[in-house]
Length: 166
Image 1 (cartoon, rainbow, N blue to C red):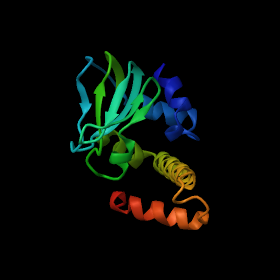
Image 2: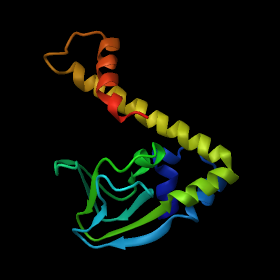
Image 3: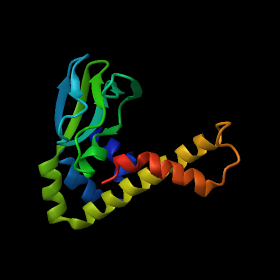
């Protein structure tokens, strides 16, 4: 099941079967009881999580719900790739089975196979661009922003996200 999730997760798009296998062997299985924290906002980012069974609630440091993620979801990559603490918390909604690729292992793999690091970086950048496009579309739907040129909306998004950039 882990290998199928890796095959279809957008972060791992374009990796060869051999490259996915190199990552897969270092994803360590783990379990978490319902109600327990997978990670907390402000904790140092220490790995990439791949959800296998169960659901996780993502929430802000202030406790506001953001989303619920389930099987096949990848969590933690955004903080890890930016070398920042987790900006959200993740709690198991139900008993959870997952795999974790520790930061140190990922770095070792990338040192041995730089092409993997390049592909992951490209995929991560693509996911950010998709999110920015989505945010521009959402802004364009608001009465206050409707009719503004796309480049203006992109500038608003850029300025709003500036604190989250490196």
